[in-house]
Length: 107
Image (cartoon, rainbow, N blue to C red; front, side, top):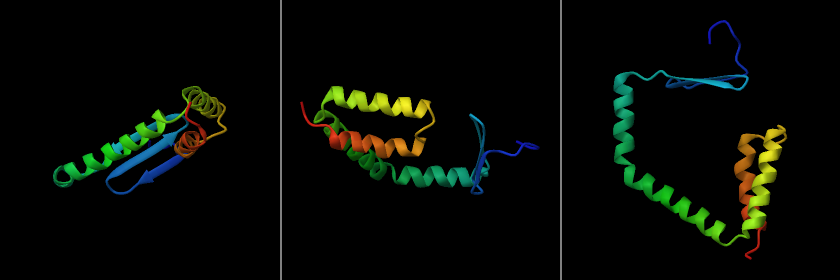
């Protein structure tokens, strides 16, 4: 990463990320103690985080089950094509996915 100016750069003291074109470089800058503390904190919240993830998965599953599969596939295909043409950004995909699930009527 030295000597080349990245297109995007992020550093919060713990993690360092740099994007150079299509390549993303990541580096963990945590000390062993910081890493151990983070793992301990995440371990303490395991049940809470698992329940939250399970809830989100169930919500998505329910929306997909109530959607017209052909319309859902068409919407996903259209989003993929837009992404390939660089007309839609990665962060917009989640929002567009939600819209696909809202507009599709049960079959």
